[in-house]
Amino acid sequence: MSLNDLFGQIPGWGEYVPSFVQMLIIAFVPALLVVLAVLTPVGIMGVYAERRWSAFMQDRLGPNRVGLPIWFDGWQRDYTGKPWYIKLWGLGQGIADGVKLLGKEDFVPPGGDAFLFLSAPLVVFAGALGIFAALPMSDGLIAADVNVGVFYILAVGAVEIIGVLMAGWASNNKWSLLGAMREVAQVVAYEIPMAMTALCPVILVGSLQMTEIIAFQQGGLNMWGIDVVGPELAQWGLGWNLWRAFPVNVVAMVIFYICVLANLKRAPFDLPEAESELVSGFLTEYSGMRWSLFFLAEYGAMFALSGITATLFLGGWGSGPVFGALSLVPVETIDLGVGMLKWTTVAGIAEFSWKTVLLMLLMINIRWTLPRLRIDQVMSLCYKYFVPFAMGCILLNGLAAVMGS
Amino acid sequence: MGDGIGIQLAFFAFSALTVGSALLAATARKIVHSAFSLLATFFGVAGIYGVLGSDFMAVTQVVVYVGGILVLLVFGVLLTDRVPDEFQMKKPRNYVPAVIASGLTFVCLAWAITGTEWTRLPHMLKEVGEATPTTAAIGKSLLTDYLLPFEFASILLLVVLVGAARVARGGTR
Image 1 (cartoon, helix red, strand yellow):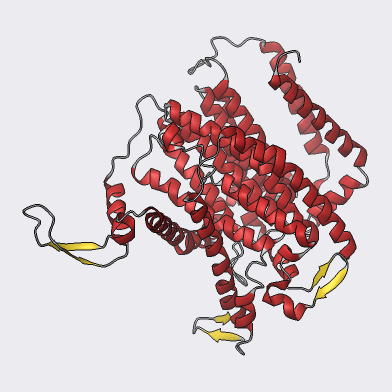
Image 2 (cartoon, each protein chain N blue to C red):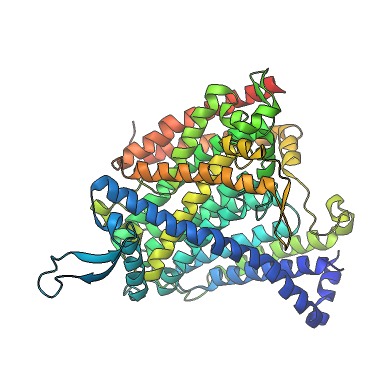
C-alpha cells in the first residue's frame, strides 16, 4: 500500500464513519464489560475482605460488625442503649465510607498542577485495567490473547509508575513527591526479578501466549527428562509449572509473588505510602472519588496479578483439583437460550477463582502480619538476593527444558 | 479495501496521537508537561507498531520507552536543581545548525520512505493488520545472525552499569 492509496481514502471520509463507530463499539464494549463485570466488584469485595480481615485480626469492631442501624433505644440520652440494626457483618462501615467519599470535595491543592493532578488517577487506573486485557479467566474468557501476553503484562506495569509520578509531582507536597520517588525506585528495581522469574515458565512452555501456557500445563509432567505424570492426571494439577524442574520453580514462584507484592506497593513494601513517615505518600492530597479510583486500581491490579501468578505457575483455569473434579461431570455444553456455554468454561471459572482469591487473601494476610521494611532492606532484598536467585532459576529452567524435550 | 479501513483509521488515530503529543512536548510551557506528554507519544508509536502487525516491537516500545526512558527523563526533570518552572525561549539560538540538522534528518527519512517499495516487503504481502508471531523469529535471528552485535550491546550495558555504580558511590575509593 503506497502513501497515495492511504491518503486516497480521505475524500470519502463520510462513508467510513459508520465503520469507525462500529470499530469503536467492537473495541470498547468488551473493555467496559470487563470493568463493570470484573474490576468494580473485585475492588469492592477486595476492600471489604481487607477491612474485615484486618478488623478481625486487630479486634476492631467497626469493619467487622457494623450493620445498618435502625433505632437506638437510648439515643436521646447517651447513645448507650441497645441498638436495633440489620446485621451486615461490617458492610455497614463500607456503605458509610462510600457515601462519605461521594460527598467529599474534589480538591486540587493550591500551587499544584491541576491538569496532571486530575489525570493521574486515570493513568494509574488505565494501567490496572490494561492487565485485565490479557488475563485468562476461563476457556474463551480472555479479552486479547496476544502472542506476547506475558511480556505485555510486564509492560503495562510501567504505566502505573508514570501515573504515580504524575500524582506525586502535581500535588505540590513534599510528602507526595517523596512517596512517588520511593515508588519509582522500588517498582523499577522489582521489575527486574519479576520479569526474570516470569521467564521461567515461558522457557518451559516456549511461548509468551497465555492460552499456550495454560494448555502446556494440561499436558503430562516431565521432570528432568523422566516422564512422571501422564496427561490424564495432569488436569488434577500435577502438570503445573510449579512442579516442573522441581525445586526450581517453587523458588521462582515465591520470588515472583513477592515482586508482585512490591509492585503493588502493599505491606511490607508500602514505603511509598508509609503513614507513619509520609502521611500517605502520593495519596496525601487526594480525596473523594479520585482517591478511591487509586484504590479501585490497586485492588483490581491485586486480583489481576494474582490471576497472572496462578496462570504462570499454578495452571491457570486449565488444571487443578476443582477443574479435575468438575471434568468428571458428563456435561459438554449448557444451552443458555442465547448461546451455548461450554462446560470447561464453567469449570475454568471455578478453578481460576479459588486460586486467585486464595493468592489475594494471602496478600491481605501478609499486609496485616508483617511490619514495613526499611528502604535499604527493600533494595538489598531485590538486588542481592532476588536477582541472583532469579538468574539461577532461568539457567536451571533452561537445563530442564533441554533435558525434557 | 473492506476490513482494511478499520486498520487505516486506527493508523490515522495513532499517528494523530503521536504527532499531536509530540507537538505538545515541543511547545508546552512547563517542562514537566513536555515530559509527561511524551507518554502519549510513546504509546502512539507503540500503537503504530501494533497496527503494522509487529506485536513484539509494540510491547518492547512500551517497556523500553515508557518503563525506562520516560521514567528516567521525568526523574531527571524532577531532581534537577531549580528547573525554571515556566521556561520560555526568549530568542532561538543556534538557529542555522538546528535547521540544517532537522532538514537533513527529514530529507533522509523522506528519501527512505519514498524509496522503499512497500508492497514488495514480505510482511506487506499478507492481509493488512494480520498479526504473525514475530517473537520467535526475532529471538532466533538475535542469537544466530546478529549474535555479535547482541553481545556487544550486552557488554556495553554491563560497562554502563558498572560505571553508573562507580559514579553513584562517589569518592576516590
